[in-house]
Length: 294
Image 1 (cartoon, rainbow, N blue to C red):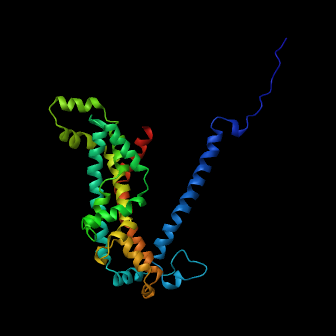
Image 2 (image 1 turned 30 degrees about the vertical axis):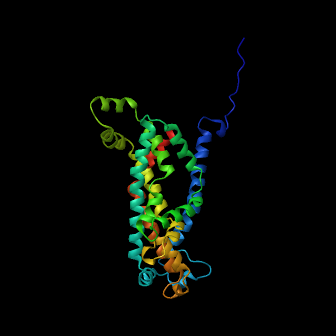
């Protein structure tokens, strides 16, 4: 007696192995591309508007691509604002704040991760508690303290309140915990001191964390507006965000470019941050990937 024959039923494409993946991948790329377009649209508008003429800026409907490319907005901005001075102020403050955070946050992160001392867990608890405190709550006590110390209208008054941050300490501590204790013990047995271990062994192993902290700190300090606005009364100490905000409220800014000058100034503010990110991009992405594995 012959066995009954069965007819194979075709498997739907969505049920085949890998079928759903072939459908989902283009969809994910499409959604991600749309999200990128939406997020980058304001930046593209700003960058293009910096090179537009007054006619293109006031055109209705709005014109994305300039019909005539011009540098007049930049020249007018440099004529009406002391941009080199404000740029230098922002650069000095951002670089000093970043260097201080890299030094102090990595030192405290190393102590919390690899050194045994009384009250270590309590200190780490204070760091975690500081992460939960909104920064705006500290503006008034910081202003009073800087006034008492006579640091208003000084670079020190702009740098010291942000010389170390709870986020940086937490980030460095988490990365340094992944360093094997056996490696450090071997260095101690060979006679290496803690400073040598910190500078020559630990820091080279946490370069991705240092790059991540550099980008976040530099970005936050470069774009900081509230504290420099409060802590500076002398226009010669203005940073770029404060100078542009003050210029935006100046009724005379319409002479020579109007909003085009604001767009040009905003582009000049963004360019250094993009440069820092491009230089440290490889370490930054490596740090994010490493953090995801912890």
